[in-house]
Length: 348
Image (cartoon, rainbow, N blue to C red):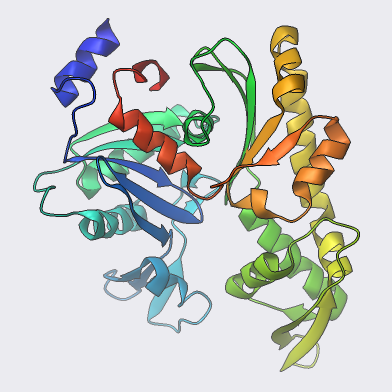
């Protein structure tokens, strides 16, 4: 009743009423998505900022800032203010969120917005406080929180309020969240701070060791998108340009799918182990549900070719990739906003 009363005070509307000044945010390591209540997703931008080193002024955010990664000189610095799903640079995060709020606002949002933000299930109290502070200083009037796996489950259409167990594996830019959901709560979970960024890093390290080739973050991400695979039957080639650190000159090498499989073997193995550990923590009754219902993969990492087949082989469970893996988390948070009274028990 206390939660219900607090929500009634915060939102002050009847169930189902549209609130023009409420938004949901998936504040991710790689990307930030914003959902406006009654309008849907209105913003999807990389979680990157560019600042002037001398004046500390914000120069660019989102796509414009990402284009500067690895290309700035002594005056500018392009950086990602979040790492492993949590804030590592509070000042840059606040500046970025302030700009994203401005981009997302319309005439219907004339006041400071109330924000529902998605956070990793393994987040600490200190990290929660950092998220709240960043959003409030960026312009949020009220801040509510929901675990990413719960939001993702709702976003893919899983009936989280039912007694049956459902497993979601959310592979984001900085974390992999493994959660078994039943009766509007997470019954078993496993959260590791490995995701898409670690996959990019693994590609960079492999090319450095194998070809003495140094590449930047953006190039590593392009290789992942173009050739990311764990399938043995994939046989593709791709030209990668970078700096040959032995000769000290720019160089181009042709890599193949076998290179990528070798590069990603350790990271993918860690993700598989995380799923196994999540299953080990699952109560027997819910485990039997998962055998029937299978596992849903969400997040950008779910797009890694062959990952679903590998997990199916390793666990013996049905595995499917969500139809909207990149946006299902913020969509789920948006659905919570649209019917906040129904989903009030999901809030942290």
